[in-house]
Length: 127
Image (cartoon, rainbow, N blue to C red; front, side, top):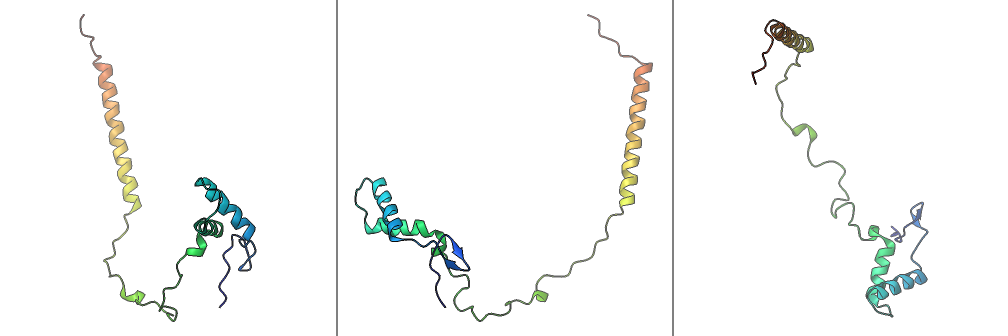
């Protein structure tokens, strides 16, 4: 199997924007200047190459070694988990009836307070 050339742009799995020597030298000179040097070193070239090719070049293998021939999962999905008791869903009619009853009780209490306020007005404390 052919190892793909690292590139930032690909067409049908083939790199079309490979790192040319001119671009590599330009980037390595820039890195050297950032460090206060005029000449690029091999370490600058290596770093420039890694920056230009991106992180894709250093990714680990997708399939671990020894697992190439693996065709099925190791664990049977039917063996995982455990049975649980079924719980019936709450009856939505009961919930709405309960909320309506609560609302009716609160409304009656509000009416009593309003009537009580009308029959017994608050007196302002004397100054």
